[in-house]
Image 1 (cartoon, one colour):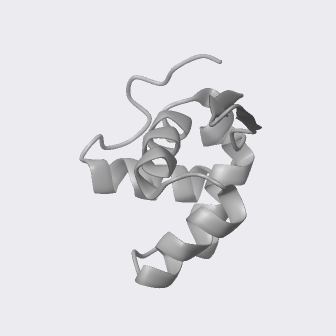
Image 2 (cartoon, rainbow, N blue to C red):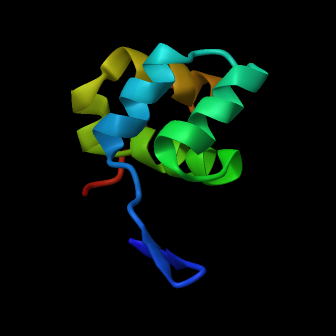
Length: 85
């Protein structure tokens, strides 16, 4: 959790991030609005967390197709350099 204006903000879990990305695979203005509305975080924070999530074993196990798609988009290829959680 993080503190924003003295209010606790719950960070989305790895499965939540990957499920959201699977629903919105391409960037659109509506995706940005949905990130803020549904996740309660900025787009920049969403992508930081998503990129970290796809590099974990949990992310790969939860949704390997979405995780690999995001990793390919980042230029990381396959499951190289997975992070244990």
